[in-house]
Amino acid sequence: MKKHIMAVLSVLCLSACSSQVSVKSGSGSEVINLGTLERTMYLRGDFTLWDFEPHYILKEQSAGIYTVKAKFMTPGKVYEFKIADEQWSKGYNCGYKVQGALKLGQAQLADCNALYNYFTFMPNKKGWYVITFDYRDNQSPTVTINMSY
Image (cartoon, rainbow, N blue to C red; front, side, top):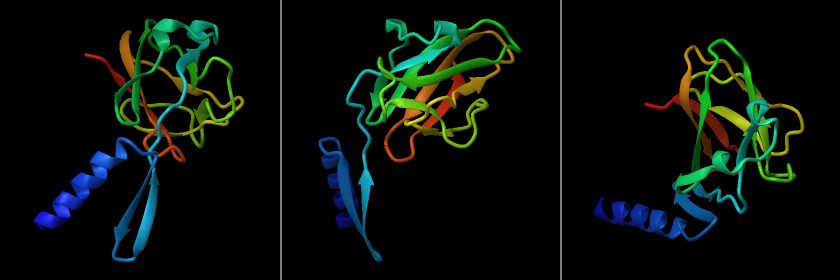
């Protein structure tokens, strides 16, 4: 048991320096892609006129987890947004993959080669919200929204 824990800790420590980790299990090995954004990403939406703005830069909170705060002041209004770089580049233009309507605390898959499929969110009350972009698995990133307290 102690050896197993040490092996897992070693993989986690090494993963901070690598974009891929090979994990061996009883049925073989699996490669896990650890997502690291290689450029500045922004929350861009109808509330920014779809421009990139410095106060909407996503900041890394831990390996592959990025967040940004947005103030939504009109309850019942549908806000539209994407997560993208300055150029809307392929691979860095993230909208929804399957479902675009975000609900508090429920992760939705993102497609970072999206053209038009933007996320939507309709707040029940005005205030600050935290948008989390989970890029740890860069093949299946997710977007989650929560109220900021």
